[in-house]
Amino acid sequence: MSTTEPPPPARPAADRSAAALAALLAVAGTAHFLVPRPFDAIVPRALPGRARTWTQVSGAAELALAAGLTLPRTRRASALAAAGLFAAVFPANVKMAHDWRHRPAALRAVAYGRLPLQLPLVAWARSVARAATV
Image 1: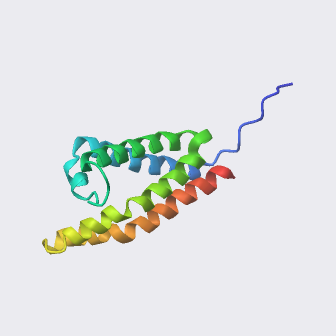
Image 2: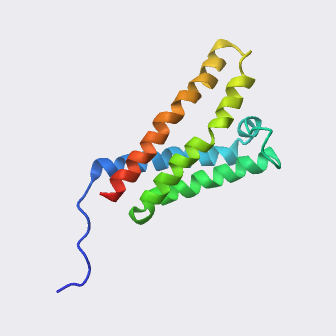
């Protein structure tokens, strides 16, 4: 008789959602290092230190969260932290919208479109966290 617990039931939809969120964070985190200047530009000036440091810290956080989402054991905590991160970067999106208010309409639409996008990202991360606990 085995002393190990049986594996939890397969949850393919929940696993796919977690994997997709991990992929989004991995791409974003990688972009922070490969093309940091756009991220530097939206770091709120009120934050202490250099903008590049904040860009690198947030990129590293996104990469760490992506890794955590891929592991069932750390998925719930990583998803909750991702929800927090999505909320925490909202001021950067506000700064971008403000800074881009005089740019051409297409660029303004991108900047303004990022603002409401944070809510579904937070909801998605929370959904992944809930599914990880069931």
